[in-house]
Length: 112
Image (tube, rainbow, N blue to C red; front, side):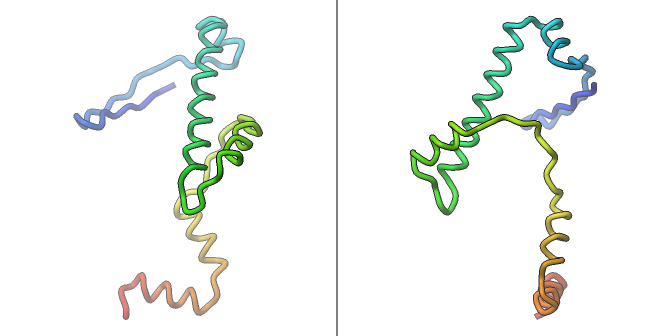
């Protein structure tokens, strides 16, 4: 597997080859049970931090009780790629009325 890395301060980029485990058993064989477990807990902790951080901010922050419930109910899953910005725009555009579409096109074209 190729892993691409960029260094934000220097602007350097490189790609390295890495043999990723094929499944959980392969990961345990390659790195050991304790390492795999510790890595899983570390990744889950980051996910929990993200849930809490997102719930604390925004236009309508959640209460401490609501946030705790989100954490309690959290079940990790397999991440599915989200929609691209273009897909989101197309989906939103399709839901607009003819008048809204015309106004948007006028605005995007720079007309007044």
